[in-house]
Image (cartoon, rainbow, N blue to C red; front, side, top):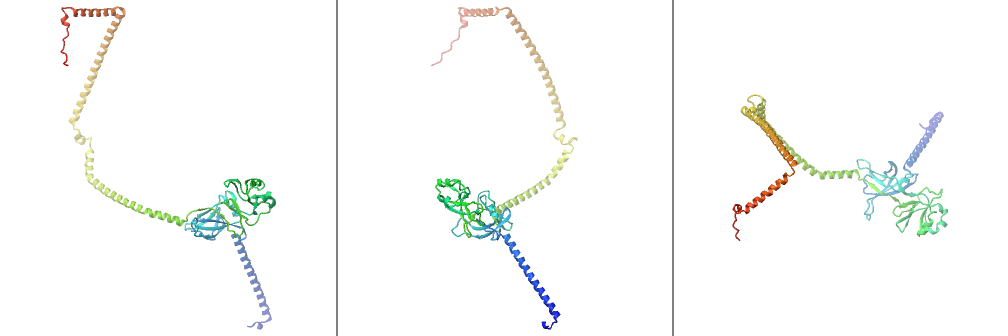
Length: 414
């Protein structure tokens, strides 16, 4: 039915419906655009598209478990993402995989020249790994947002506005080895020292209030001990040392290799165990046979020893009754002999005691006589001398001379 064939009332209603549908379509499209914009904004916030991002890099032994876009963690939180993963060129023989990543503001403020490092840790049992950075413990910030420049030492006061508020942007050494001035110390108190050391140029940072930029102006160089100018697109990134743990697949492969190398020894051990078990089985079988053969002997021995205290038992076979009587008689005689010997010994000891008493009385009497007669010893001595003179005179007398002659012996032949 053509539109002109409708009544005016129907055409009026149809136009109202069309107008309502048009407004609904416009509202739905606007709502869809709003939701899509909110989604994009929220994702940009989560991704840090509107925040400053500081680039870093490190080297890993393997790219296993890592890929571009993976989050970078700091103290367990996602603070950035991996942006580049490439192998080095053929002339680099010290590194394997170049890994570049970025940290979102303000998380890169935790990265300092001392204590900060990149760690590749195991994430799962299927080979997954993740990159984590550790917060610094000292040193200097990896990136600076204050204006950075290099100025000649002689022109510090003439070139730098309010030069007293500027800071050193590098470590200053004497003779190339002795550290004299640290970076980030005041330039006003050290300008004279710089001149005395003969430093021609010095890197400085503008520490005046309100001069801090929203973008990075300098990056710290650990090797040279100085800040270097940083700008968008610069390849002078801050390098973090890596602490890498092998992937779980590599660990499992190492374990499998160890098990494989140990299998021959295990098999040899199982063979030895089988031989030992076989010998043990043979031994138990032989012991069983021996026990079966020894069972009658044990039965007879039990029967023989069951009534040892009865007449005719094993005790009487080993020790007959006549031997027992003889042993009792012998022991009785030995006891009587010992008693007699003991009695006689007591008697002998008593006789010896009486003899000693008599000898003591004799010596006591002799002692008393000697004490009462003090000349007895001189008389005895004189009697002995006289007797000796008498004998010597008899030797010289012609009648008794021959009785005292000594018989001469033949002299030995020479």
